[in-house]
Amino acid sequence: DPMIRQYPTNPRLYEMRGTILHKLGYLDLAIKSWGQALEFNPSNEGLKKFVDRQKYVQTRRLASP
Image (cartoon, rainbow, N blue to C red; front, side):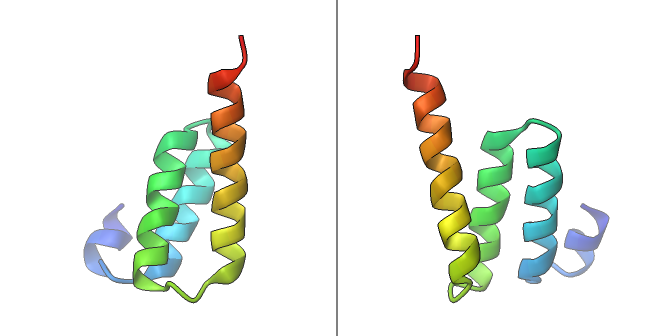
C-alpha cells in the first residue's frame, strides 16, 4: 500500500496487491484490486481472463450449500 500511495496509477502494483490478497484468502479484496489494475491498464487480457475465472469460482462458492 505505501508503494500504491507513491505511484497511485501503476497497474502492476494493484495487480501484485491482488495476488497477495488472493494468496492470503481474501478473494473479494483481490478481485477489487485486480479491477483497479484493469482500470489503469484495460488492455491486460490475461488479467481480465484470470479475474473472470476468479469471479466464477467465487460465485460457485457462494451458490453451493
